[in-house]
Structure formats: C-alpha cells, structure tokens
Length: 212
Image (cartoon, rainbow, N blue to C red; front, top):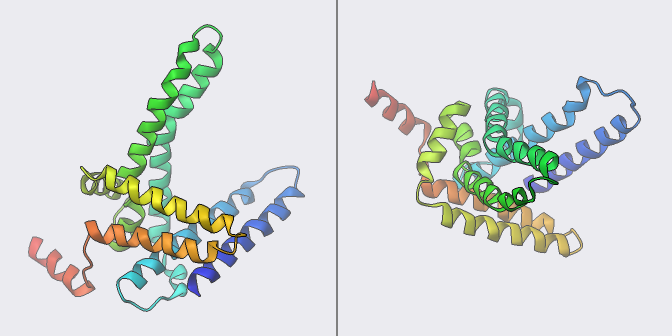
C-alpha cells in the first residue's frame, strides 16, 4: 500500500508540473520544483523500504522529517553527477567537435560506459547511508566506496536482476510495476543491510559514546 501511494503521488506530481510548465514559454526557478519533489519522494520511499526491512512500522509522514537528509542527498547526487557524468560530457563534446578528424574517439565510449557503471555500483549505498547513518554527502560517498570494495560483481548482478524485474513489470501492461517496483526497492534495502547491519538508536548512541 505504501509503495502504491508513493508511486501514485510521484506520477501525479510529474504529470501536474509537466502540464503546468508546458504552458509556460519562459522557464523560471519553478521549473526545478518537479525534480525536487520527485527526489524527496524517492528519499521517502527509500526510508520506508528500509524501515519495512528492519521490521519497523512504515510511516510515509517521514517525508516531513527528511529536510536535512534531503539536502545532503541532493548534494551527493550533484557530486555523483560530476564524478560519473563529467567525463562522459567532456567526451561527447570532444567527439562531436573532432568526429571528422579523429574517428577513433568513438571507440572510447565503451570504457567510459564501463567506468560509469563501475562507479555507479560503488556509489549505490549513498542514499541509504545518508538516511540510516545521517552522513553528509562527502562522508557517504567515501563510506559507500569503502564498503563496496571487492563487491562490484555482486552489486551489478543484483542491479541487473532488479532491472529485469522492473522491465518484466512494465511488459505486463504496466500493472506489474505495482508489484515489481516494491520488490526491486526492497532488494536495495536487503543489499544495504548486507553491508551495514541494523543498529537501534540505543546501539548507535552506545557506539558513539565508546569512541569519545
């Protein structure tokens, strides 16, 4: 039920803002609102699936308590875009300008895509770390890179399974997405808990006190 609600709200906001912005000729700062709302819903959904996996009561009202993690999440996303997307953007610009004189540049796209997939796997725990361990963007990126060391193959395999599951749901007249997306989302929480076991708030406080 929670996943269905998140999905409906997510799609509703997307359609609403698309309709509103399509009528506006001049783009304004309001044009980024759909992206902000969608990212906030993704963050809330991730928190819900993590709570469900940990045996806690799912509460979508958590969306109103996610403002600090939300900004950390946005900063982390921007950093990941620079790390992963930056080299790809530079490559496409150079390839476009030099395609007639340097046709061999086209062969570099494969290693760049492989590199992007590699870093995508290494950064796959960032959202969970920001929510679960209240980390900042830089700390979450470093920790995710540390935890996933030597596990890229496993993460890639799980990611491919989740992608196939969602694709299967899409082919089932879209209705299957209501079943595929929750399972795929929960699989992310399952993978995260393999790397970072659940700790109660008391456990975290005790661990922090021991390090002081």
